[in-house]
Image (cartoon, rainbow over all chains, first blue to last red; front, side):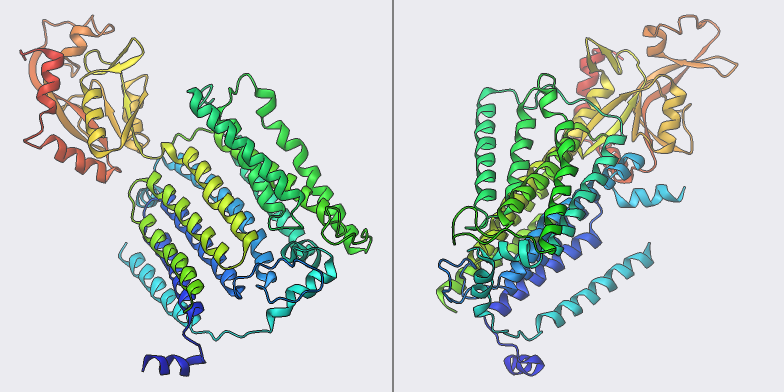
Length: 129
Length: 225
Length: 238
């Protein structure tokens, strides 16, 4: 019953890729829960980092084909390999994502130095004054 | 405070709905089995991932490196404005830790050089090499005596070459766009594939110096509320 | 599901588990270690999926550099600030180490709730009172007594009883300042009348959770800290 419902929804086959995609989307959801509901500012940063990792993993998952690395041994051979385009795109994004998160860490340090706390409730109270 | 809590829960519920919809998107196979071989044959490099982000999508890589340098310089601007607390002379003093850290730093530096120079022949590439280089310098900064080696490990060294290496990357990218590319050499040798090996080394220098400067900025700046 | 698919599912299954347990931690350092574990699990998953470039970059960056940097940056994240004005036997700084009754009390309290106190010196009482009112300091110790220093801007928590000498003009001085303090030796003891008071810790109003824990710590009947410290510093009398 469940399978027919899902097949009706979009013709999605229930295999390993579907299960992996569900797990990685749940990583993003856990990160979002951390950003919204955690009071400590540093935990919010770590939760944002977790969301970043989840998004990167989704890219790599979309390039998965028979677990063969996209490195061609000889010129002209045509062994089916993983898709190199998402991997190339996300390779630069890992490093750049870290640097943007480092900038966020510096902002949080400045903010906590001004308010002398790391708690968002206290910062909200002191902001009103 | 009551109203804000409801908005957060509603936001999270909407996110769950969106994620559930994303999970059932049908996957379309685009005939991807033969892409990799064609890219490798055209570029003359075995590693197709490097061929894509250093030849086919060079425009994208150029601007990603620009975003990287802008965010690093922004973070350094805020880190240098505050009053600095001088770190203690060494962070770790017992000799066993010093030896282990020095060994790790040497291994990291060697792997950075290996990843950068053969990045077009086997998996690796400029970005991984830059990160490894930055890490080895961070480990060196953690164990050395800052007062004695202040000219070696101060912030001047990364900052002097950081912007000029990005200018070099820009120059070589412009050369690639206007078509002046050295010819693809022998398949699989060290100097094959046009500007790609040089770009790998330049990206390693850029990313490595950037992470080194950022880490030095964090280490110098003791965080007291 | 073939064998290789099972391996990939196993590696990918680790990632939400690591993410969940990372965000349930209270201490910041535990969460940073959890972030490193998530990075390693992601690198294993990428390597099994046939993306070696991305796996090397993620392992080097997400598990090595990020953990190292965050541990160095965030290692001093959880502490509460205590300002002090020097008062001998209560909080004094001789021989470069801070010692005193209140110092030991707060250190013991910090050890119980696993948050370290950091002590900041102040020059005058008024500056410290302003700092506590603004929330710049979480607590204040020193020559502050219970009936006279009470105000609406901060809470007081009595910790030790003492005698207060009060003059008719409103000026008062407490016992330890009279005995040991150097600048108040000119206080005329004859025309003053003696009252009972308490040395107390002034608490800023913003630190709600800290205040509740401190109140319950002091009001606990099984707590032997205060009598022990009293015995250590003041002898059996008083």
